[in-house]
Image (cartoon, rainbow, N blue to C red; front, top):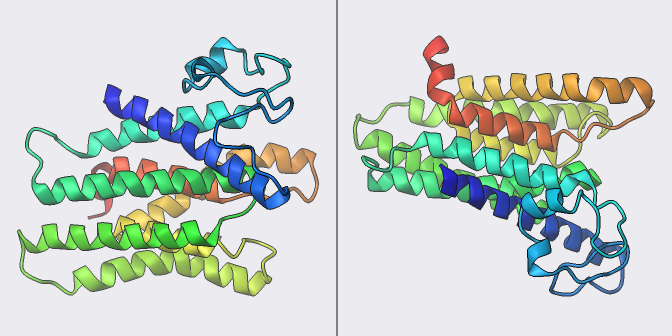
Length: 261
């Protein structure tokens, strides 16, 4: 669990840095280079300035040289991804896990790294890169196939193996696609339904898809309502809430399913 927390913080830092660099390359002719620098004064960060969570706290969220605010996105991405990895560690018993369970766990972890990048990028810039969404869908399909192999190793084939993941995709991906088409992109973005499709595929269960839908909307409402109330026409970037809801649902899937199955 400690190892997963540390790895999560590292991948959260990496995802945030990657999102910044990709956006910077799109907006400027020159990139920031290979090593991390301050976005304000271009001070090249030392290795001890790049320790996830610890460096941000030690510097008080400011650049060591120009003392301007680094921002909360970095520390938030590191802490939330670390917590996500910590929750993922609850989904496997390393002393008894089978090969297929390790495949599911490792692929799901890579899937969550991809989702972390998407959540950070959407939260910061209100966009979901199509290429990364396609990668997320591919990883979700691998997770789905691995789960079906695990089920088939213990039980005979059932039509549920086909229609349950399809229902999960319709609940998340289909709903957001319908909202996007009906509102002509005013209510949700064109990437939200692809993100929902990836998450629905990985969840496998329509019940878990419904729970994820509820949690994501609940979080978006309680967190963004004060902002929307004070700032008119404030757009809600829904990707981060959908990703957080997925991690919670996946980590406690057995608990949630015990109430509905």
